[in-house]
Image 1 (cartoon, rainbow over the protein chains, first blue to last red):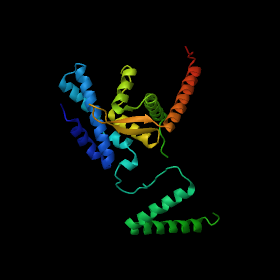
Image 2 (tube, chains in turn green, cyan):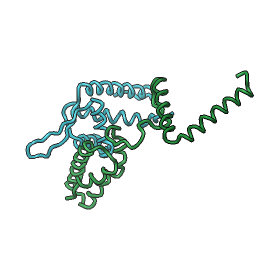
Image 3 (cartoon, chains in turn orange, purple):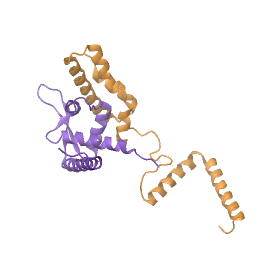
Image 4 (cartoon, rainbow over the protein chains, first blue to last red):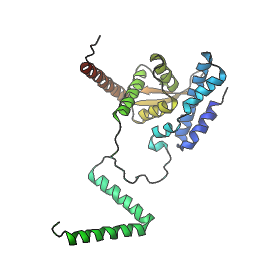
Length: 133
Length: 114
């Protein structure tokens, strides 16, 4: 009998789920795979084929990560990604942009300074050439 | 702006309806749910583990399902899912939406109800 718990554990580990979520999911998936394998065997499917067909259930294992809630997955970087377009009110968006700007400034102050100077120069040129605007 | 294809939304909605419906009468574990969907659809519908368990866990987090590890005599402990009152309400709402949708398609396509 294949060790379904071990097989499920190996497949789930790279997903980086939090320990309690990973443990629950591993046990549930291992039981599911074992049930499916036994069902195939009792339906007359050969052991090798039953094993392959059962294991194929885990082919697209990264869907587990995509389907997992954010709280189940260990965070890697910024909680607020650049260009985030989640719905919210105007002030939510403003604070989000401000936080993102602050982080960018911390990470590369020279770039942020150059970008700000560029914006000021562009505004001055616009004012010079199009004074009516 | 990110948009979700309507087809994806329908699949997601119908998957939720199927799972909630199967839990209406009694609690079931994941494998039982998956087997029932396969058997009752004559093999036409199948849930892989990689779709089923994230769905069950999401419905649990939404408060529609409650999950408990249950240990029965001569059996290993298993995680059983049951409907919460909120889940029952969501099921009623989804059943109504589905009926309305089917009736609407029937009217447009000229398909009479038996």
